[in-house]
Amino acid sequence: MPVANGVACTLVSRVEATALFGHPATRSVPADPGGAASVCLWKADAAPGTVGDVAYLLQVHVYADALHYSEKVYPNARLLSDIGDRAIAVDEGMGIYAVQFVKGGRTVTIAYSVNAIGGDTHAKAATQSNEVIALARTAAGRM
Image (tube, rainbow, N blue to C red):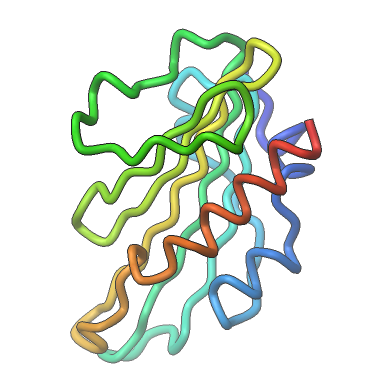
């Protein structure tokens, strides 16, 4: 059975999520862990309930095997050589940027999304790709 929070929440801290968002991060409980052994969700809203709101979400999934590593699914993935045993970074479009790595036989996915609700069209997760990659590097160091 998947563990909400657990080890996933030790890989990226509230302070780190807040720094990425530029707004206070709060932990959220995942509705569907998608087969992960551990999941941690951090979220923030720039202006809750308003038309100009920008919603931020950082998802950390830890899988108990390397089978969930999906480099082959993303032919345009950027290979990263300094995170875990192998790693990729992917601009998934639709405001989602993800880094996935394998370390010690486990797969970790860190997915960052920015959703501008009728507001800032410049709010895109890919513009913070270096920060997301740095978070993944730090997370791998904590395993």
